[in-house]
Length: 607
Image (cartoon, rainbow, N blue to C red; front, side, top):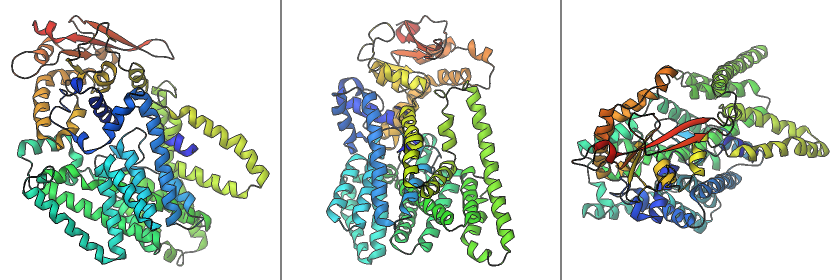
């Protein structure tokens, strides 16, 4: 619990949680949010029960409360489901460190590294669905077919994309056990027929993405196209595959078979996505995002690393363990694929040590350990610099969590704690629990809510449509600068005119991207100048006096064809008269951190 709370600290309503916030608000106030470009043409909310659940919960508590406790419940579900599955997959002595591996090792997967991770520290249906998929697999391993199918169906009702990804691995495991499960592929035939005869949403099987739509998706949603992933993404993908392949060969029991199923499922998902989306440009496969199977394959890889670390530490194979740690660090640093020879050396280690003297093995272990220390010192130097820029304030930069998040720091700490615990007698364990574990847990509880200042300020001002000194009309569409959706949606409870986050719905509906493209063209000068004004490569004096010029303001608010925003919210001291301001106060220094100013487009355009 302490590891979970310290490493999965609550980040607030951000990332994709903001989009689901909007979907819940749409359920509650369709007359306000139905005109928002994210919802006006239809989005993914119709494929999930999660927005409807949020709409009900918003009637019982405000959104920040729902998201705070919902995230905690989701994380606990994920951790419990992981343990439930590992109880069935691994023998005693290996489960615990494998479980901790799923918590403390990096969770990032997929394209655009850093965009997706399992067991996210904010509330989305992905978090719930991932826990349910693990529960389903745990039930399946125990031959509890009814509960396995039920858990998978509920998972699909919350987030069908993550559930389908899990189904690819489950089906692969079933086929590995019994080839007759291949006949399940015949179930695709009715779906293809439904698509051929134009039944939604299956008609997307035969609908090709046109060039305009494709260009927009490739610009704003590159993670959909496996061929457009970054080299760093392929690096981590290859690392997961090699770890899974080693574990599948090293553990030829139930655990090894599931590792093999993860490899096969991942290959099917990536190949299908590459052919159907990157090459053929088909609409429904693009929306299905079959590459998401990487989340489960990555979970299995991190669990396997936990098992391998514990095995090597328990067998006095610390030089080999340090080589594995170095391979992990090289992989996550993305240094020219140097982790491959390191991991191959780990793979053939038993044959290597037969050919070299014991002293040489010891010296190699020291060298590997020094390599890990070098990486940590380099990481620590960067983190201390960022901590200094945050004025050494833990509320602005959680350096303690950042150090624990170093790929093997948490693993090393927990391994040491496990072996220390085993060496203690009963009364000393009681003392350690009271003096160390309980205080660490209490600190974890206190520090778990780590929302940044701006996020927390927005969430504390929930549904304040008069925050700028007057009641913003319900029909208004507000452009809030700095890519903010929580500003108009959560604070004002009004439709957003445009934010890049709204483009996430473009893969589900072409019209969303077309409308957003028109709004981007209108706002482009304003957005570009805003980016220049907030670019920290410029001096503080330049940024202090920076503002949007009058031509960009007039273009943003011009009448004529296309919908214009009703209000602009900017953080710059503009020559134009602001009709209202909202000051964000730093709770520590009591100084003004940011001032948001609202401008009326009717005043700027003169009508």
